[in-house]
Image 1 (cartoon, rainbow, N blue to C red):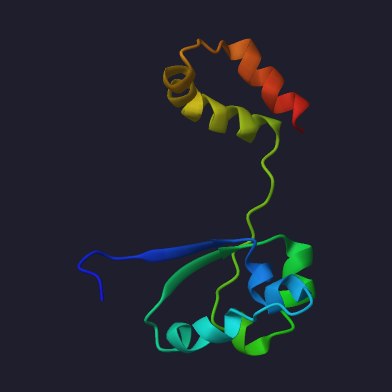
Image 2: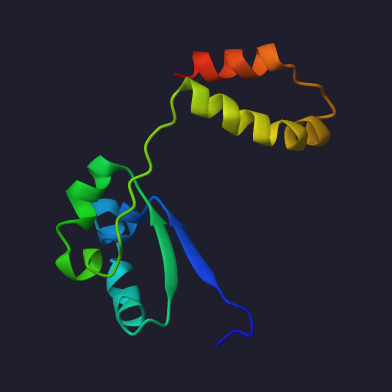
Length: 111
């Protein structure tokens, strides 16, 4: 129990299942399923769609304990808006100025 709400974020969540199917890997998903089922563990898990289909979806007990949220890749316009929102953070952190042309180039070159 925590006096503050805690949310566990698991990146590359497919690796929890049989440690990504590595030989001798521990299946961590079996350790967290009971807490998830009882609602004691708030969790956000991230993986790619192909890894979800390959590993997570095959574990019915695990997959029904999560709600799927498909976050698509942003298009160039959306990426530019995202970068504009982060511009001041990066400018301050790196002691640089980022002009609009650089933001637009970064968004279009990453598409």
